[in-house]
Each structure stands twice: as structure tokens, then as C-alpha cells.
Length: 203
Image 1 (cartoon, rainbow, N blue to C red):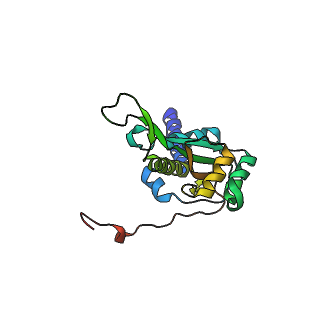
Image 2 (cartoon, rainbow, N blue to C red; image 1 turned 60 degrees about the horizontal axis):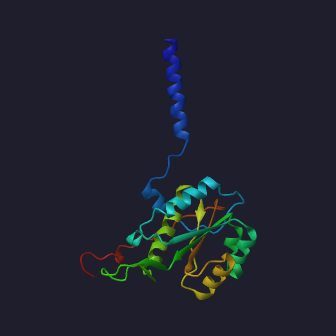
Image 3 (spheres, rainbow, N blue to C red; image 1 turned 90 degrees about the vertical axis):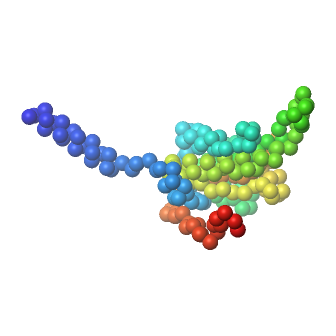
């Protein structure tokens, strides 16, 4: 009887612990709760969290499996300052900044009959980088971090500033800048559900 009582108490304790811990967000919960967060606490983003974010970004779909995305991870204050410019308070204050870039050309055969590959424009690089960025944002939400998509491409001034700040090589174009950190304040997702934007079968 004593053993049964101890076992029952242990089960009750485990159940109580389970109730006090939040269950991980499901995929749809993460999608529906994603929001743009522009203000962060001083708490750092861990290296483990950073790796998860980047693995999620690299799990995105990509045309012909080219995977043209390249990521520059920025934690240095001087580099953040160079990236921020006059518009980038959130870049300055974020403990982690990920710059999503893309290789705009690929090596491929110009025709089925060709025997050698040549360097050609990659028309899919922006779509691929967009998919990677969305994965990055969703991963941040799943980790209870805050993030915001800050456009770089196709604005020449922003791209030039980013290329200079990061020393990007020729053929690598900055697509967007994503400041990431622990949210400071109560940030809520926007309701973007609009049935009037949906057409079935034909317009």
C-alpha cells in the first residue's frame, strides 16, 4: 500500500509539472501567431537558438534545389551600426541580426545538348530567399523570439549600404535584414484573413 501511495503521489506530481509547462507550438499555431517585433530586451539569442533559426531557413523550398541563399549573422555592434543607417533603430538594438543574401547566378548547361556548364542568371533567387526568410521568421516565433523582415532588395541605396557594411562579394545580393531578439512589450499578430481576396477556379 505504501508503494502504491508513493507511486500515486509521483504520478500526481508529474501531472502537475506537465500542466505548468507550456506545450510547444504546433505548426499552425506558429503561423497564426507570427508577428513583426521591432523592440527587444538586452537578453542575447543563444548560439543554439541561432543554429535552429538557420537550419529552419535552409529547410525552405528552392527551385531546382539550387539553394542560392547565403546568411550573414551579425552580433557585432559596429557592423550593426553600419547596417542600420538612419532608419535602423531596431537593427542597432537587436542582439542578433541575420542578413539573408542570394547568389544571383548559377552554373548550369545552357541547353540539353551542351556538354559544359556556364554561369547564368538565376531567376529563382528572390523567391528562394523569400521562402528562407519566412521559415526564419516562423522559427523565431516558435522559439518565442521576436523578429521583423526589413527589406533590402530591390532598393539600390539599401543594397549598396548592406554590401558595403558586410563586404559582400560580387554576385551575392542582400535580400533582406532580419533583426531578432527577445520581445520587449506586448506584440500581437494582425488579423489578415480576408475571404474577399480568394477566388475559386476562376477570377
